[in-house]
Image 1 (cartoon, rainbow, N blue to C red):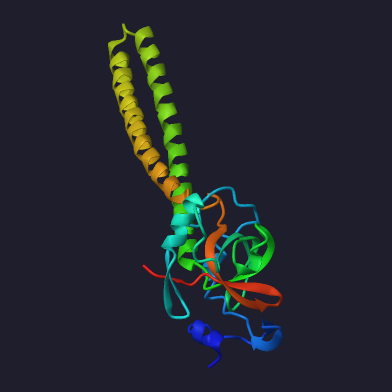
Image 2: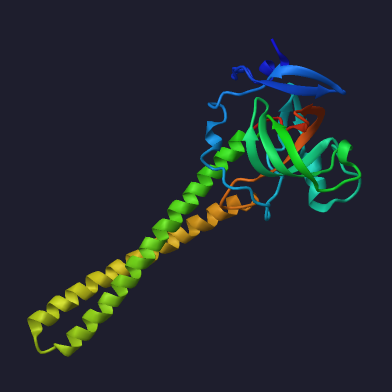
Length: 255
């Protein structure tokens, strides 16, 4: 069995030829992937955009070539950049997903660190991200959907609160102007009470939603952007190339 199939046992490789460069020699390999594996990507991919903020300090425990790796020392160093950089072969990869293949994602963006880039920081270009963080992508998609749903609900509630408040004020003015008409005045007073109750309920619900929105935004703050998924992670330099693109292995995430 080809080592690519062992790395991706669930992937059937259709007939498509690519070239793998290993130590200066080209080898022909089958390198197309079933769309089923990466079907979740399409829902949250948007136009390429430069990362704004965020943090690569996620998923410190990885499995690479069946070996467990703990990136915690690198994560600690990253916060302060104090002393020698541990785990030098682990490169900071950031950018946008512009395609997929049998290895994982094709990422266009920046590279920082790694033995092949010791003299260059923020090296631009395309790379292959092997064993990409699909669970991270799925989590971003879930949080992004939650934020949009909560924001839409808040907008509707704010509108209902404003309308109820305006109608309650109008009822109060009409009741004062028609205080001699007791029947009409009582009907206006009842309607005013109901509108004020609706206004108060909407206001309380908005407070609850604001807290939920704050919680979701806090979780999203580790990502470069709230409106599209951008890669921001550490990946192991493999010294391999695919179609002249260097391959970096994110590793499988361990809980």
